Structures are given as structure tokens and as C-alpha cells.
Length: 399
Image (tube, rainbow, N blue to C red):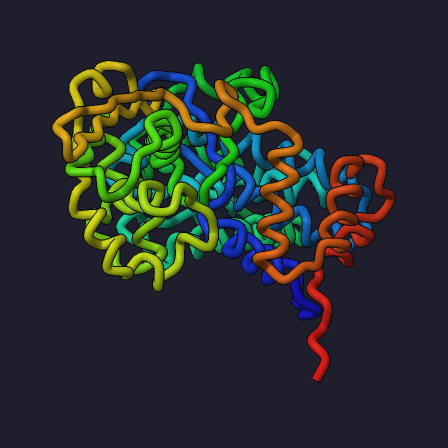
């Protein structure tokens, strides 16, 4: 978004961090019931920045970029699906870890590495993989995605220079799967790469709100209740939100004090919708989080495990909401998925409007945003990805 020019690895780092910083990025969907929906990876943050940087540097086409990006996402998601659930449940951030491997795969493809060199690049990506969930709600969470993206560039480029590594860095006894997860399920990755492609099935979930994906079914339910019953903040006596046990394990900030914590606070997300009937970039700021009315509403929200949601399976984000009003009446709703999931997708126009809002928030003018959208919808026709990148830079400020 600026005129600053840096080597490809640092551009990948900066853009990976930026993509993940607002928690407005996409989310991988789980296939197996014990692979937790929304707790696998955010596919694009690690996979796009390395190939975007290398494609801009090497003046590659939009089609080259998109193929490498798809491969990065595919490897990242299938690795995340295959590693045993212990990996995430005991503290690893899979966007950081599996993302590092996917980033290496995408970068290797864009650089045209042969099979053997690509094996080494994947191993180098895996050996750099790291990131702890304890850092959720801090600046270090998006740092994870940035480092994963940077790791991919480093892995592919030093492999291309002849740097040595294990040819079997993932499934070996001392490799990534065993060390980081206690093992993996071979049937979930062997023969499954591109069969089907992750983007084809099960797809990814795109966020309408800049918060943790696990908040989104609840936010969809709450918005429906607000509109259907014309709920006013002063009417609300109590809000109860029930989910499976994995969701409170990730949405850990029950009394947030800043915007980063608020993104992982079901309580804030319910409160802000009740107060403002929207939850966009302008709502997720430190000033808003610390407003007296917001903090007071947060205290009315109880968030915990609901037996019905727990029994629905972890491949869903079943969220059950009850709102008790001051007259004693109760309104209820529930959802398994949020808006933007394949079960309830955003339209092309809704995606375009999300981009326009982000572009305005980031300082692009309307004409620039329109030009970017025009190119993105036909990105496979671009002969040089630099044509798009020029439009993504904010105009220099004049004194």
C-alpha cells in the first residue's frame, strides 16, 4: 500500500502480517468431524504474499500468480487437515506452521523448481514452522502469518541455490507431522492434493466482519434477532451464547480492553451488534472497545459450552443464542455457519463492497479501488502482475 520497496522476503512478511492483522481474511473449512472448523488455517495470509512478491519482482503473469497461489493454499490446507488435532489443541497456530509449508510450495512453483528441489524447499519451510496460540489477541498473531509467508520465500530461494535439507521433512519419524502433532492421518493427504482442490471442496469461508471466524455464526444469529425483533440495547437484560468447547478455547478474551482482544471476544461481538447494529473496521478500535456503554453491554453476555452445540460435531461452529429482555421474554436463534461460508456465501457484489470498504479504510480513493476490482476480476488475463500492484499503492501525500 505504499511506495516502499524491499526484497521479496520482506514484502512477503509485511503483506502476510497486514492480511492477518485485521482478522478479516479467509478461513479453511474442516472435512473430518475431529478437525475443528475454523481452527485449521487462514489460507491466504501465508500463501498469497510470497507468490505475489516473487511474481511482481519477476514480472510474471496473473495466471502464473494464481496457479502458484492455488498450490500454496492446497498444500497448506491439506497439511493442516492431515496433522493430528493435537497440533492445534495443544497450542500451535496452524496458520503459522502449516502456512510456512504452503508458502514454500507456492514459492517453489512460481520459481519453477524441479521435484527434488521442491522437496527440499518443503522441508526448509517445515523446519521454520512455528507460532503459539497463546499470542492470540496480540500483535504477534498476525506476525505469525507474516513469518510464514517470509519463510516460504526463504525456503524456495535457498533451495534453488542448492541449500540442502531432508527430502522427507513432513512424514519422517523426526519430521513435522510427528514432532508438531504426534502424527498424521495419511488418508487425508495421500492422493488428495488437487483431488479435489480445497477451493472446490470444501471451500473456504470469507469474513463479513474483521474478527475471529468462530464469532461469525453468532454474529449472523444476533443480527437476525436484532432485525427480526427490532431489539434495542436498553431492552436487553441478558445474552447467553453457547457453542462447542473448542470455541471458548480460542475466543479467550471475555473482558477485552483493546481491538486485538475484541477480535477474539464473543462478548464484544454480541455487544457491539446490539449497540450499533454493525461490526466493521470502524467498530473494532481501542476507543470503541473501551466505551462505557460497550463495556457495560459486554458484562451482560455469558459465553460458554452448550451440550447441543457440543454434540453437533467440531466440523461445524454451531452457536446457540438466547436474549432475555427486560419484560421477561426470551428470543432465540442458532446457526452452524456464518455468512460468507459455502453454506451461506457472499455474492460477488458483497465481496466487491467489502473490498471497497477496506480500500477506503486503507487510503485508496474510489477510482483506484474501481480500477483494482476491474483487474482482479480478470486477473488471469494480466501479462504482468505489476500492472495490478501499481494500483494498490496509496497516492503519496503532498505537503
